[in-house]
Length: 161
Image (cartoon, rainbow, N blue to C red; front, side, top):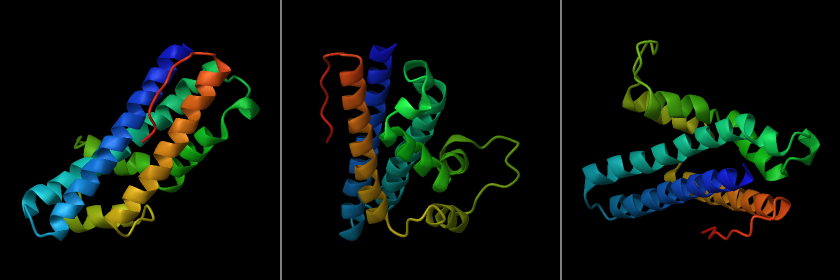
């Protein structure tokens, strides 16, 4: 089980990193005035990858981690920080409304302005802030991987950034 969890965390870290780099690349393109449509949607795709990975991380933490760390006090602090970020930034709802669902239960599709307002309600005013925050998240996931590797003597390696 620890082996699989390590692989899941590695995949999520990769998705976060890819989302972060995607945002960075398309932000630079937008700032140069190049490919305005691709830049706009490239930034959206990068952000979407980040918030979906965070939603998955939240699921992973609540559903899988208790198996390896039944004692709440023994669970890695980095995981609690990540889950607290998901909650305090309302990332599950953001992922659902902006990326994952257009289900009938969604009463109203968000306008572009409402989407921007939702992202800003997550305490980000600029794409650069999202990119910087995601770096912190990746570092926390890396620390979780190290802890899991040490606690269960997996002998695995990974590259954090």
